[in-house]
Image (cartoon, rainbow, N blue to C red; front, side):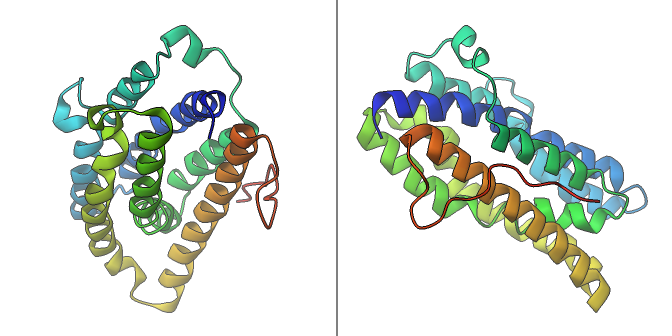
Length: 212
């Protein structure tokens, strides 16, 4: 990854990071009758908001990464968002607000928490080598390597009562797969933008409809 590619990744991925916690907030409001479930989701959201410290929210941690790369606010706001990232955002707003909140649980539980630790472990190692960044600039990535394992367990325990039968499992699975499909598209779009070449072995479609 060259310097231009790193800057492209950093700017574009921020568009994802700065709104991702809002899906969880929407899902909490969608689980209207289960206070225990709301509390489990709120525990994860509390971490996302840096335990209510505005300097430690996950978007704030990401801005430290941008600043370490010498990218200022005007620059990180200027380029249009990749359509693949826009699609991911639209899909997750739809899933977190779906009338059947089991789809949102699947999307924001197994599909969002379990995949992140191995992805971010490799990403932080690559950025450390390619950009020479100190550990404090990479906290947005390194913190998730362990934090999201905890979040995944919280989410799986919270989901379990809703996946106790075949129909519940099918709906949670549907939400998870729609989320993972959207993640594959987003990461494919980022790869093409960063490396300026097709994704190796396969080229993920640039846009997929979210469906209902």
